[in-house]
Image 1 (cartoon, rainbow, N blue to C red):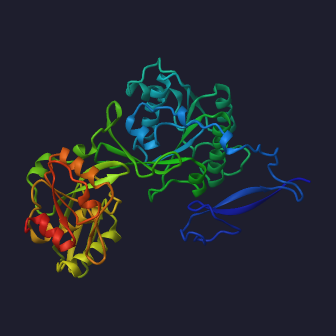
Image 2: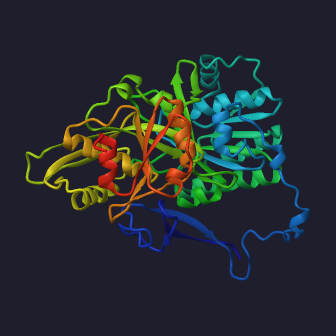
Image 3: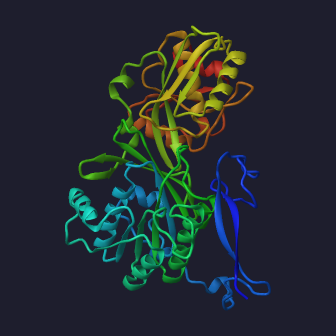
Length: 459
């Protein structure tokens, strides 16, 4: 009996399937994400993809590849990955066009090849000649032992992997690979899922690590089905501002390390270079020495790395009936919460005024410790008084107006002291005042009103 085919509609956002098309996915609620997909159904009484039973072994007898991690040649990237590239792991690297995904991976390929490892670069969007030109621009000489294969057919790409048996494979990009056995176009849900599954099987059986370059949607999310992110071992997101030369690589998922770490790079003529001290890179010494109203410095934390950044706020009379709330690099809903706390607990009438908040340098702050920095910057702009020079703040703000301590306070204080800050407004009690650092005077605050007074020099 021959296999029959049927058509289903798969959501490119969450991976849910539906028997018919509709404008909105019933599972995740996203609009216009259902894509038609032709699937093959096995005859009745047979099992699709039947194979021999999987071997069963004791967990204690399973060999680990932890000791065999491969360094990328960049300390920033190794720390983000949890210590280096894990053999047999599948990585997904996403980002906006032109942010530097291909550039970074080509540089990593050269560094890995210099260690005696075999690297295969599978080009689906460029020709080998274009890759050679880009390598020369990045200072990668022709003696670099990097293997290159151009093509988009999935079976041909896998055959190239089987012939060369590389230690590291780079597929640029997964949206260009297509399986001839599927009738859908390259980049569709079924094609992307098939390519990811094929490379996942290759990595697990051959012990090679693979990097899949993925495109992003208009909303900034990784293109393709959500199952693509579930199939890989780590998801790395490249972030960058087109008006700045810095790039941030963030781990959205990592089975072999923390998802709180970031790696900071700068883009130059010779490619991407790691930034060893991001705090000094993003801060302006002149503005730190001569603060202006509406500016506050926050000792944040990205994973285990402390990062001191500047938050600017502007409170102005609203010429319209509805006040504006414009925010950059910070959660807009969190800003609404902090404005309500300032209104009720600190007596600041910010409701009828326009409020603008921005994280300097185009960075994005996600941790709660930035709450106090936003509050102090807003209060400074409202009062038209600068924060005391050499003062750094950090702490979480609660709905009742209290300032809560955050983790690794001593690490934040040590970073601030190295940058020349001499005073820190922190949460009263807990970890906020437990870790004292030489050269930093602590100003503990129990409430938002007290923290604002300490930061502006009223106490």
